[in-house]
Image 1: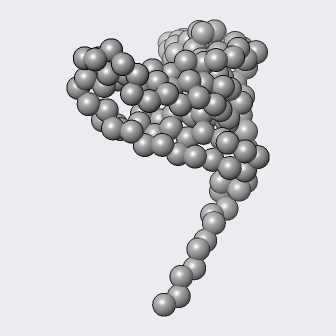
Image 2 (image 1 turned 45 degrees about the vertical axis):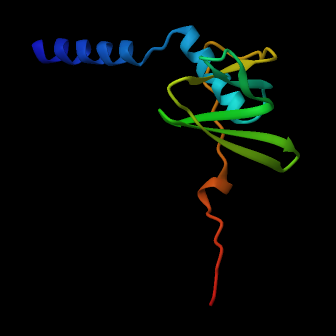
Length: 128
């Protein structure tokens, strides 16, 4: 009996840990939409000393904070055209990303996309 009670307690604890708040699910779904170039964003790099914008990037963009000192911004510019910008961050330069349009996402369901082309690699063969 004690083993069953312990097992049920553990299953309940695992189930409760696996639950996400609605805001977390919606946030992940918005990030997913942005990473798939479904949202318009504005990414601004700002100099905290001078108070001036250094660079502004707008469009269907996804960004990745590669490290504390580097940010990659990839933007979709056409049906199959993309541009990538890599920027260094210093002590007085920071960045922020602003979502320019709203997107209806579910707060209850995750969105999953299976892309077989990401599993099958592109192979470039170079012969000397």
